[in-house]
Image (cartoon, rainbow, N blue to C red; front, side, top):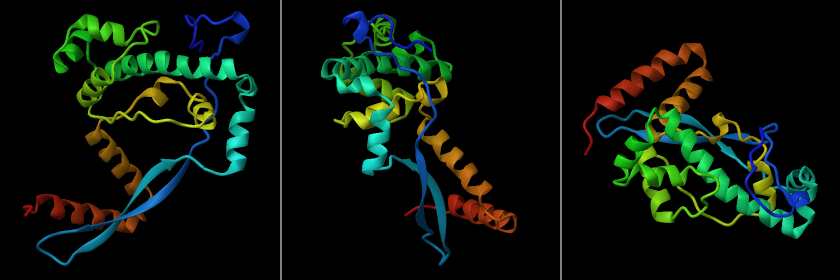
Length: 205
């Protein structure tokens, strides 16, 4: 996949995003769930991905991007990741949700032309306000933060539609629940389903 084709620093400085193997790892987090009218307390495991923080991991991530040694190149790459990455992610998530540009525009009380600009990799002037509205329409979070180049190197290793897709909150809960249930012993799965049903049907305080 050729990701960057409109960015215009010198030709030999052109950064190119290429999908590679995912280096993310998983960890298990124990979450206690308590009901209000019974003494049933059980632990549910949820799987969350996290980036390793070791010096070795950071060096390996940077070693995969030797051109990052050039300051002009790595900052051009970072700019392209923002301008083009955001545009492609908006388009991917809109299409995966079965929305037209007009439908998304209505959801954020804007015009179709605004969505078209947000999905244009050459535009590069999306405002935080617009991105926040789009994230709300997608029912996902928007995170703006400073990161080291090692994390940028990792994030650009997989730019497939599946990697760019961000599930809405409810879909994420359902998917995590499926993964958790698949990892439970078969004998316990009916018990957990029963407890979950009891908990969801109880009135809240």
